[in-house]
Amino acid sequence: MGASFDVMDAVADMAYYLAEWYLPELTAESVDDVVAKLDAAAVLISSEGTPVQLVVTLAVPTDEVLYGVFGAGSSDIVSKTCLQAGVPHQRLSADVGTRIRHEPVPVSGAERLPITARSDSLPNAKTML
Image (tube, rainbow, N blue to C red; front, side, top):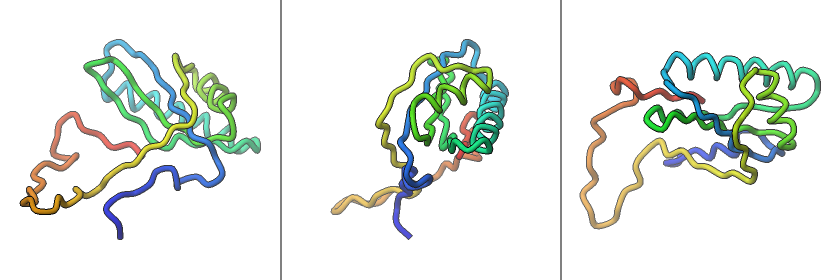
């Protein structure tokens, strides 16, 4: 198994789009609520024959922003999904690529530092895939 997982391999034959929402007083509960609405909308729209998937979300509470990467056939499908969920995006970027590294990459000639913190041990860390 390699050191990284290419999120863009998660849904074949789709383009990837980055949606942004600016949400004052962003909390873990509000993120969970938005993600649940987006997931439900994606399932509904996909069941109608237009595949769309929320691949990953990233919340930055200090900046009051939530990012979501969608796999879909067009930006219109992503916009429709967000509207269906009741959370229209404030910005949408196309041609998005991302990599999520699950293990540190060894640095040649340097001592490898141990990883001491896990996402489940950090009070505000949450992984949503």
